Image 1 (cartoon, rainbow, N blue to C red):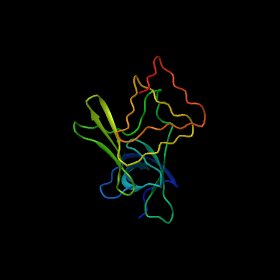
Image 2: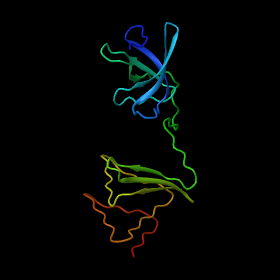
Image 3: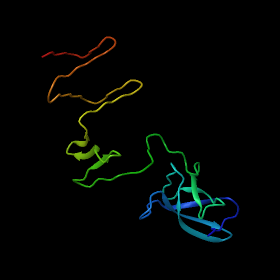
Image 4: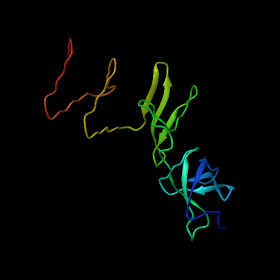
Length: 168
């Protein structure tokens, strides 16, 4: 079945991105010749529209339905510094956000503790690697090795600055 299209490209409006049984499908509304059409359409790989996004639809000659090929940008005002648009997860009391790997093993868990957020890395070992400098900044920093020693290695000098430095 061919869908109503005027030419090869149409702009539609993403209404939902949570198809009940098929991943990668979004409910899209578009209008052609005064006719409003609403359908669940597949998305191209790596295209992830959110509700209220304008999307580019293409109807290939040899395909039975339109495909969402992209999200149209530049329609909303620029986001001010400090604001971070995007998905939001709200945790209720006693809930945790857990991230699992492709193999189903838990990687990370975030909960709300009495003094603030608690981030737990759930694998035995962790390697944190950055190409530049790594900085920690807080009112206070406490490091504790529950078992074993603390080792510091450097390819240059190790500098420790403080009002008072206590060893042992």
